[in-house]
Amino acid sequence: CGDGDNGGCYDEYYAGLKNFESDCFNVCEEFDYVHYSILFNAFVFCQIFNEFNARSIGDDWNIFYGLERNKIFILIIFITIGLQIFIIEIGGDFTKTAGLTAYQWIVSALLGAISIPLGFMMRFIPVKEDESCYAGYVEKGESFSRKEIC
Image 1 (tube, rainbow, N blue to C red):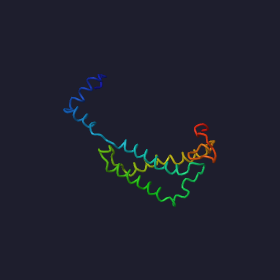
Image 2 (cartoon, one colour):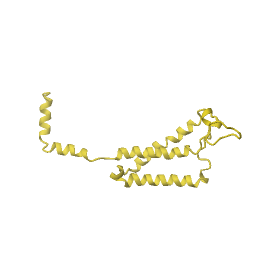
Image 3 (tube, helix red, strand yellow):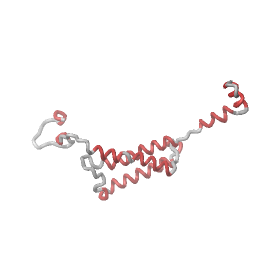
Image 4 (cartoon, rainbow, N blue to C red):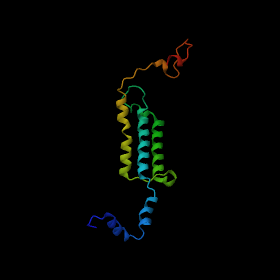
């Protein structure tokens, strides 16, 4: 192998492996869903954290204001997280997911949490709004179509 004949070196090395094809290539037939599970988990946590951003559609920067009074919202968040844990940890081949380690759960949740500061920063982008274009807004005595003005 030291003479620079790479083909001969390859043949010498792999000639000793009797079941090279079956030993090396069959490993690739076993699917590992961990990578996709982390991406899916991060995506779902993006949605969960974005639900907090969506609680206020105005310029109010405190997305947690009045959270303790909104029991249904809190219930939906807990149900969503519970279902996500079930899908990831129990789903298996049916949902094409794999159980994650505690570190992978933390990393994917932190990736999803990026939507909180993004939502915070978006609140400082000035946007002109015409309140007459909001759904359900009609002044008394007006008979024009909303599509004409918005």
